[in-house]
Every structure is written in structure tokens, then in C-alpha cells.
Length: 324
Ligand code: UT7
Image (cartoon, rainbow, N blue to C red; front, side):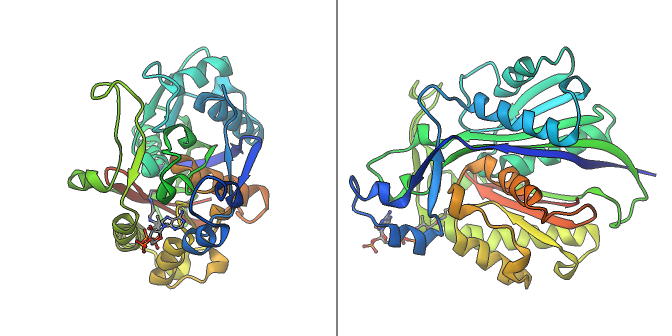
């Protein structure tokens, strides 16, 4: 018998305000055509004034609980992957736990930027498999609109706000790749690459939130190479091949990166979930948002083999293979 972490609910929330690419044309030397052709992004959602990451996370959490048919009290743990928390502390996760009315359990944030949700799944799986928790909610929630430099056309047109949540619960498996649940995890970081993607402020340095700085071309180069490698590593750990995959659900940063990774794996785009056109890059929220959209559309079916992968600031990257 092998303990597995099986998805039993998924949900998401997007702020009401939708901003099309054309909205940037008035203030920046950019165009809808450039943004579409270089990134695949057509629109993104931005949080309203006063709407915070915890509000987005809470709405996604409630949607996931509804989807699972569970009450908040049945959760042992809430993990929120975010780089844009409401406050330095408390954690967004504990704010969500409180707002859900949970009377027990534990809650914490995890920060691995765009790879945060993949790291969060790995963390939840470790808690479940070690017997420390039986039911864990992993949320990716971000308000990247709050750390944009609105004069920098090379970054501010790429990001958006949103949240997605997944509930994992312990279940017995046979120990084979036919089991439902998380089958393999592959995580990496390379702190020597800090300069190519970072925020230029923070609590103990500037005392400000800072703004996102990115050398896009460099990050792109790392992404294409590292995402295919981590995907292959996770598949190898589970003893399966790309042919066995039903779905690739990648981090949604750039359609060209997504296409490049799918091509390296030999996967047709019909088996790739793509939401970047509607959400932009929502960092840690992008994968759970994509999972939730695909689930709502009836594309993800129980038993489907799903690979998620992401890379972001750190650099931090990795992948998780699971059977839905
Ligand atoms: O989620 C975290 C991980 N992040 C990523 O994965 C992002 C990775 N990088 C990318 O997605 C792409 O590199 C970008 C979309 C950011 C940029 O695409 P690119 O094809 O690498 O363009 P580039 O940075 O090489 O820029 C090409 C040109 C430059 O002009 P020159 O130097 O050739 O004259 C830029 O100044 O495009 C210019 N440019 C723009 N033009 C119009 C940059 N941003 C814009 C813009 N509108 N918004």
C-alpha cells in the first residue's frame, strides 16, 4: 500500500476587471499585435482597489470546497503560494483559514514565485505521505499588478491577477503509475540567476514592496531548456513517457515557451491546457487557474495523467506529475 495525495476539488477566482492589450497603447510604445505575437497574451484581470491577494485566495478556496463538496473544517492544512501577500505577516494562508472559519489545522505561505504552486503541491504531498495531514488545500494567489512598473513595457503588459485552489486528500494506492494522485515531483533552484528576474524592493532592504524587473530574453532561454528537462525527469521518476500523458498543464507565462516545451516533449498542442491568452502571467496562480478552467470545461477527467511544470524568479523551477 502506498499513500497518495489525490485531487478531490479545484476552483478559481478572477477579479472582475478585464484589461485588453489595447489598453496599454495609450500610455506605452506598444501594441496589441506585439503583445499577442511575442507572448500569446490577449487580456488579463486586475484586482480592484482594496481587493487583496487574500480576497482572491479566499474566493478560490470557497470554489474548491464547493467543487469537492467539503466543509472548511475538514481541511487539516492551508498552503498559499504567493509572492504578493497582503501583509508582511500574518500569512495569506492564515487569513484564508480564519475567513473560512476553520477552528483547527495549520496554515502557511510558501514563496517560490511562478514555481510556487508546483512547490506547494510537492509540500502538500510530503505532508500527506508522512502522515502529518490528510487533507490539504493548496492555493496559488497573486496580485502582480501591485508590483508592476507601469512605465516598463517589457514587463507590465505580461502579468495579471488571479487565484486557483486545489484540495488534495490521502488515499491508498497500489504504488504504481496507475494510481490516482501525485506520482512524481521534481524541484530545482539556482540562486545564482537572481539578477534576471527579481523585485527591486522588500521588507529588510528598501522597506518598500518594490517593482518587478526581468531580462525577458534570458528568462526565456532558461525556461525552454529547464522546463523540458524537469518534465522529462518527473516522467522518468514515475516510469512513464510523454506518450502516456493526457494533459500538459504548464505555467502560463508565454505561449512560445509553452509551444517550445510541448514540442520538446513531442506533445501535440491539443493535449496542452493554454489559458495565457485570457489571464496573462499570474505567477503562482497560473497552474491552478488552468487546472480549474480545464476541469470546469470537462477536459480533465478522473484517471487522466497530468503534468504540471513552472519556472520563475529565484530561479526556481520544477514539475509535478499526477493522475487526476
Ligand atoms: O513567469 C516567470 C517567467 N517569465 C517568463 O517566462 C517570461 C520569459 N520571457 C518572455 O516571455 C519574452 O522574452 C518576452 C515576452 C518578455 C519578450 O519577448 P522577446 O521576443 O524575448 O522580445 P525581446 O525582449 O527580445 O524584445 C524584442 C524587442 C526589443 O526591441 P529592440 O531592442 O529589438 O529594438 C524590445 O525593446 O521588443 C521590444 N519590446 C516591446 N515592443 C513593443 C519589449 N517589450 C515590448 C512591448 N511592446 N511591450
